[in-house]
Length: 102
Image (cartoon, rainbow, N blue to C red; front, top):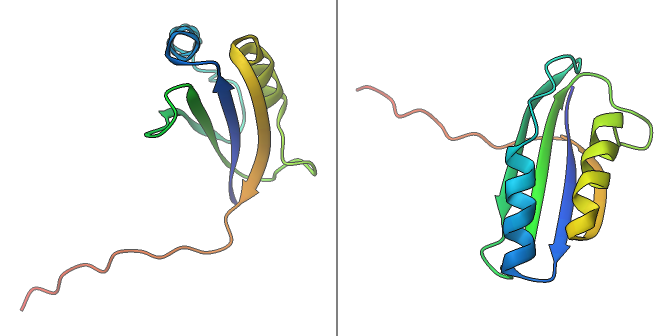
């Protein structure tokens, strides 16, 4: 089962967000985390201080939707601003249809 954790950071502005991005780049990929597929950092196209981490998992999710790794990353980023941390389970998806070769 595919699920993701989302850790949103609302920092006080560009400088704090920049420091958070630098801190993120220093984190080694945790290869020993079972089911971990990727960790992606996105920056808002709106407020410059908003960042979101998307932790993609494959497998069983914790009851609260938050992993030990997610808690650690949220704690590490909390020094840069306010954190919102939640888990999401994929329910369905739409996929682009392949063009037919006629």
